[in-house]
Image 1: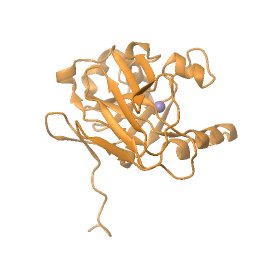
Image 2: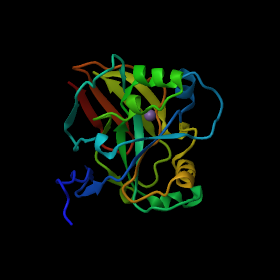
Image 3: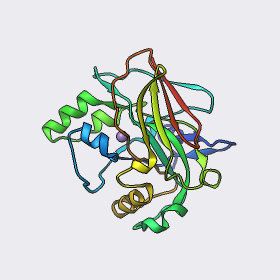
Image 4: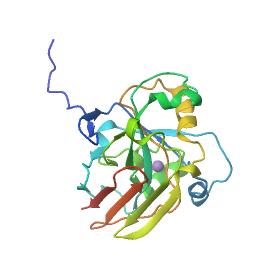
Length: 230
Ligand code: MN
């Protein structure tokens, strides 16, 4: 049997030093830094929660280049969320935090772009966040660096500037649920697969961008991600 039309190409992210990482799913962690949870109106340690973006929301930006995203439809409040992205190389269910590192293929800098006004309306109505989070081009990402080169990333600066002005600044050590714990929780709910990406949550300082803005995201040990809004 043949396909009735050509299937979409596999979404892939360049690996620093060569090769392409094929993307399976994109999982995202909500409210995973204390000060960001507070700015969104929440306090205290709650169990991690997750949402997904479609794999083809990826906008892969090669090292040293400036990626481009189009200002999306239906919103007047497009927010940046700088995040450490974890790339899964070995799948599994019920992975213990102590064993999580061996499932990590590498890391990248990512942006969880958010139509905050639409997300807010959905929250208020008790409806799914999809329209606020899972839209086209909502997941810019820089090159993936193999864990073999970086080691485990558990501390280090995570920052975002917009047009050179600081917007978000924290340390990976400030994560409420660290990467290993996140993998434990996530793999209890879904069978992780090679190619899964985990956007691990954003620090405080989320705010709006407009057409013409240039975002520059950084995580210590990884190449800078630069993305312009057009
Ligand atoms: Mn996020």
